[in-house]
Image (cartoon, rainbow, N blue to C red):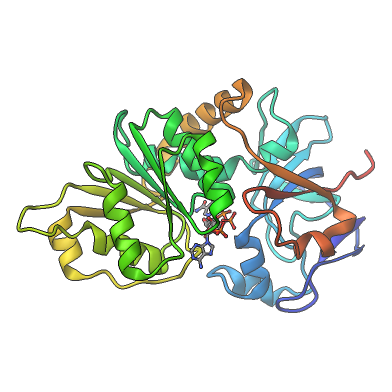
Length: 323
Ligand SMILES: NC(=O)c1ccc[n+]([C@@H]2O[C@H](COP(=O)([O-])OP(=O)(O)OC[C@H]3O[C@@H](n4cnc5c(N)ncnc54)[C@H](OP(=O)(O)O)[C@@H]3O)[C@@H](O)[C@H]2O)c1
């Protein structure tokens, strides 16, 4: 079969022939229909992710470890649990029974492949327990997950949605998705702190943070009250780190602002089924729009290096023969 193979750390995957997968007892061979390529996949290949070690140790290896496939019986399923060197960017994968689940009717494979990024946005409810009418700040709203989070905030009944990004045109397009105000993070530190304060209204109840690093450090600064009054509570959900792996939290920001920080995984397993069902319902109804760019597996080298897909998720579609 054909697959995308990484030969050495940080290499661009190459489309080439590899050995056909063989299923053992308790496994099945699925025909791959769609695989989303995310920042995390590129970071693993580059050796820059906390899960990179097993991948680097298994080189040459096939990247991406979940996707959408078809069982031998013809059922469209989401699969996961793959381990290096056998990733999902291939025509066929071997999957252990129990590591796949049917995709609901009416959801196309390339959309199903990106649903996990929408589930991430649901962390504003599962982790931060967003209530209707509250104010939501989406940090990194011009990216794929951020654009979904803006829509989800609106669909969950947020009273006000504020969105941050760097690109003026991309920020302007967020109004159509439901953002009430936008903030450009590409400004001097003091200006950004002021912009966070000016857009906060009565305060940010929930922050969905895809950035971390400098913008989130300055957001924390902006939450410090300018008088001896105590700040209003803000529940910040840590989801991504596009702007940095770390930042310093000023002690006074925690002491005075009422800031609470949660990981996106908080309550995720308990809330996953409901969150997934809700996302499916919105997608089917056309209320939640997931922007994807599909490319064939044979173009993986070109696809992997694309940097022009702002706000649209790259999805590889192998189009393998049915066996
Ligand atoms: N935990 C999960 O399950 C999960 C799921 C999906 C994503 N994530 C994480 O969430 C983050 C965003 O993912 P994504 O798929 O939406 O990525 P993406 O489409 O590449 O978007 C990245 C976002 O971050 C902004 N950004 C990038 N570098 C920046 C910098 N140095 N300073 C300020 N802003 C910067 C981008 O702004 P521009 O538009 O100006 O470039 C864009 O808004 C990533 O860290 C990803 O790993 C986590």
